[in-house]
Length: 178
Image 1 (cartoon, rainbow, N blue to C red):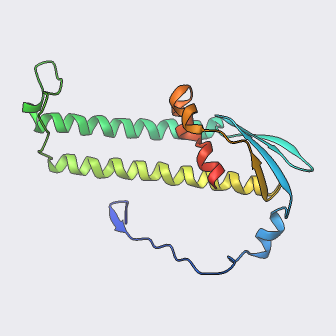
Image 2: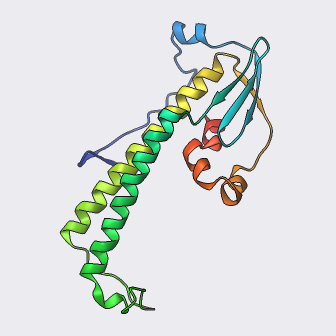
Image 3: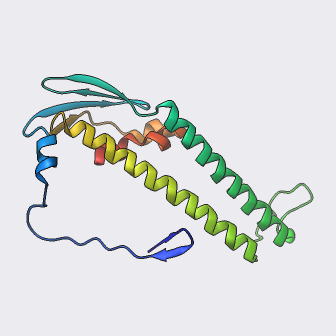
């Protein structure tokens, strides 16, 4: 169940036994039984195939601008939620605006609920766009080969150490899963 543009939509994943259908056009675009090596970084992806070697920029300027605009919208929505919560629950905050220990903000206004739905919609849109980018990139790599060899890297360490926001945007772990 997912809220899409203010309406609840239901999705089902149907799984059927056997080989999945692949159109002839898709099969012609994928190199069969060819090993391709990948080296994923925070922003670039190096692809080494049997006949070609190339590097893909996972964060081109146009995509970065769209992502920054979406992140700004999400941040504005989060701040509006915080202001609304503080306005409806003033007993939970001291004179300096800090949370009072042990207090819970229990009152949620209709405006807060409306803003929460808007925030969820923005986050859903970002999630869908990121998934589409991963699929597009995975299909581009599959043109070079269908057997993928990658080094075993713990991407969560990258996220916690140096590349937090960039890792959330480029998501190399999700790409490897695709």
